[in-house]
Structures are given as structure tokens and as C-alpha cells.
Length: 166
View 1 (cartoon, rainbow, N blue to C red):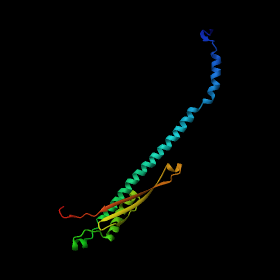
View 2: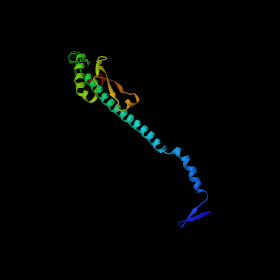
View 3: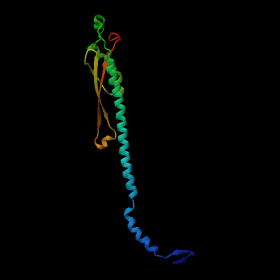
């Protein structure tokens, strides 16, 4: 059944009662979209922050590895020239290792922030270690202040022909 109001046909099948029944039920739903979006946005910002911190960690690890590798290679070039001239033996000079390593480390310290420590582990090998602490930006909000990276590298002195038949 319908009635005419101002020239328009208006249904009178109880539609007035439907809107009054639906409105109170929807009252508890108002603002749920805003709540859901705020939770989603917060989660997205936290994940983005962790991605930035982990990316920074990867960059700093690469720089630290390059610095420790460079120090190991520099230390491996510390040929004991006196022993080589006298006996044709290829071996390292421990005193030269430290000077070569510190020279390379000083050049790379601005980039990596690591100060490697190297020592001869045999007649022809050098082992270097270093560590760098990378502070976090967003990780602090969840209790992670910094990451500490430990780097190890080995190098061997190879000078000319090492074995007969090479």
C-alpha cells in the first residue's frame, strides 16, 4: 500500500519502522573503520621501521666486512723480506702486520666504524676480527637499542711461486 505526498508515491509498508529498528543496531558499529585503519596504520609503521633498521644493519655489516677483509689482506702482505731473501721462505712479519692493519683501518674507520684486530695464525696466514655496534632508530620502541655485529676474516700470504711445478 502507498500514499501520495506532494505528488510523490511513498510506500507505507512499515518502512518507517525498519529505519528505527536498524539505527540502534548500527550505533555500536560506528567508528569501527577508523579503529581498524588506525591499528593497521600502526602495524604498518612498526613494520616499516623494522625494515629500515634491518636494512641499515645490512649496510653496516657490508661496510664492516669490507674493512675487516681489507685489514686481513693488508696484514697478509707483511712479507718477511729478510727471511725471503736469505732462505726463499715466504712468511709473515708480525710487527709489520700491525702497522699495515692500522693504516688500512684508519682509512676505513669513517665508513665502517670498526677497528679490526689482526694477528698471525701461522707462518703465512692472518686472522682478523672486528665488531661494530649499529644503533636502531625504530627498534628502540620495542626495546631493541642496538645490534652488535662480529666480523672475522682470514687471509693468506701468497708470494710468487709457492710450490714446485706451479
